[in-house]
Amino acid sequence: RSGLGTINHTLISLHILRDNGIKIWGIVLNGSRHSSNEAAIKYYGKPDRLYVFPEMETINPEQLERFFYQTFTDNAS
Image (cartoon, rainbow, N blue to C red; front, side, top):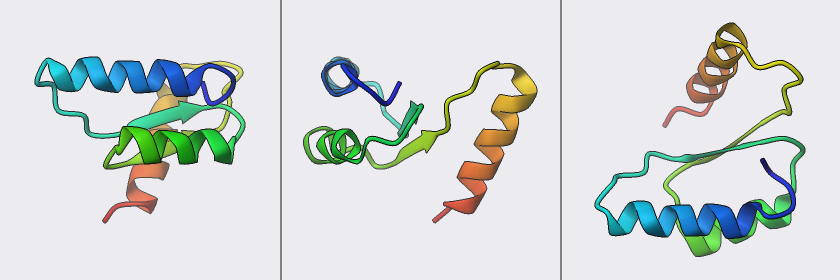
């Protein structure tokens, strides 16, 4: 999620994954935008990519596929 607690959890996860040699493609936050949280994660976590998906009331494969396709094709570099 994008709100309270996400900075700590995300940075710890990034640290553990990197320490274990796992390549991180990017980070996806789910929920309302919190620009200060996004900025802190970008600054301290240094991910290659960071995306924010709107909060989804119901999560199902079709909805996830639509958001992934929309986000990753719109922001492809």
